[in-house]
Image (cartoon, rainbow, N blue to C red; front, side, top):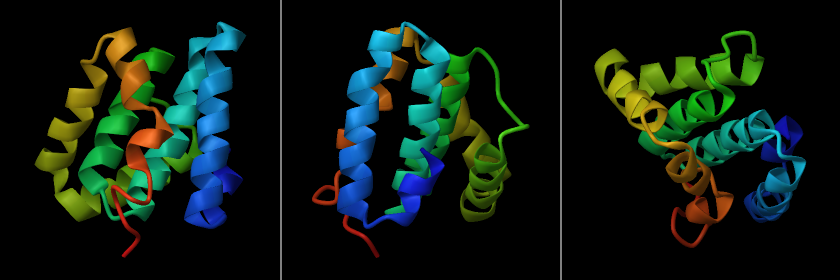
Length: 121
């Protein structure tokens, strides 16, 4: 999933959509958390640091905990804190972390971050 961010935005979104659609069939919610982290990277790529932080919080909710061992989570968190400031990042992250499972699942849908909605900068 991480490698998808290096592709053109349209290809990344298409692959993210496929992963999001397939994740529930696994019945393994942490798999959906991986999709959430990739979607957070997509939101960041569109210059949406706040949404990226919310998605990281939603990923933690789906996974059951923050994952400081994941290099992509660490990098997105560091860049999000730098872009938003510690307090704003923590507030956005907390918004995602407090979502219930159904709301977190809906939030991480990559289609919500389509290029038409958030054009690349």
